[in-house]
Each structure stands twice: as C-alpha cells, then as structure tokens.
Length: 83
Image (cartoon, rainbow, N blue to C red):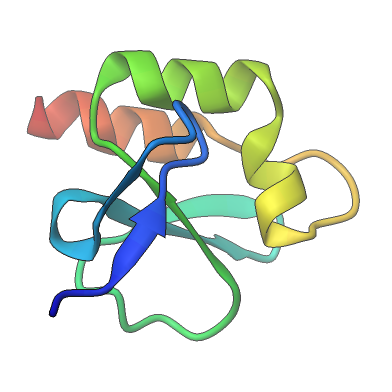
C-alpha cells in the first residue's frame, strides 16, 4: 500500500507519488523531486491552481514551520520550466 499525503494547496489526500515534496533551505523554498532532502517537507500537486492556492494562503510557511517569509521565486521558476 502506497503512502498517502495531503496537498497543502487543495487539502486533498493523494498518493505520495502524485505529489511534489517541497522543503525550506534556509529561507528559500526548494522543490525536492526525489523526496530525499533533509528537514521537514510539505506536499503539493504540481498544478498552477494548487501551488497558487498554497502560496496565497501561506500554507508552505505553516506546513514547514518556518519563522518569517519564504523566497518562492526559485520554486516558481522551477515549476514554470517544467510545465
């Protein structure tokens, strides 16, 4: 049975393989495509809707338990190159 995670954008539960893990490297939001980076992770669908909703609601800051704002420009540009 495959592990299930909750998307921080739409709050829907989904298999781990269909979600992207995201971690905070200092104050920078980083996509962890292989899901092996150390630290606390948040999971999100790789869709513009889910990522946008998570950024608007500041869900990454809460899920990753980071104090202060996160730099999301690198993360957003990585997703745009893939899409």
